[in-house]
Image (tube, rainbow, N blue to C red; front, side, top):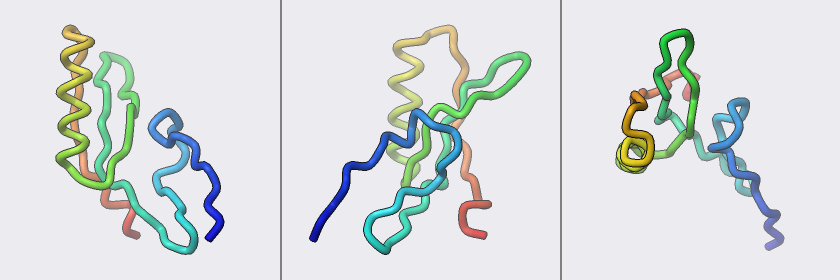
Length: 77
């Protein structure tokens, strides 16, 4: 089975799913950075535990930042 290297989707805001062969792996849990003028999508995850862990680490490195974990149900439509 030939597998190609996948790009890191957490750095891009345009691809909410990851393709592995013929399987689609949706990433409905989104970590946002909340700013006064806009909200920035930081990363997407398959499960909430990973998203909350990333949010905790971001809060440790950026103490003044405000982050939120949100479930994006549009991935399943």
